[in-house]
View 1 (cartoon, rainbow, N blue to C red):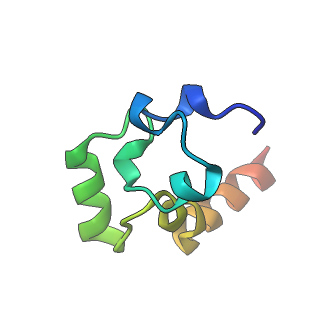
View 2: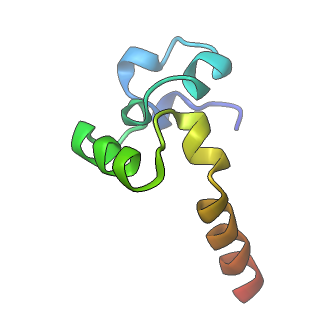
View 3: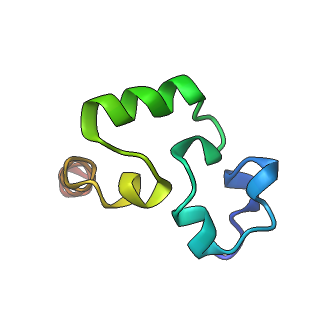
Length: 68
């Protein structure tokens, strides 16, 4: 992703990719604080990195790709 500024909240637009990865999940556009809390409760996901490396999300992504 060469330009991720349109995928994160304005507060994170000038941050490095590493900083964004370590940011709370609600740094992503469209993810509310409530959504972030539900992800934390269900899967112990606290950061963007946690979301991107969660085994259940990775498994679902792999299954979806194989289904195509």
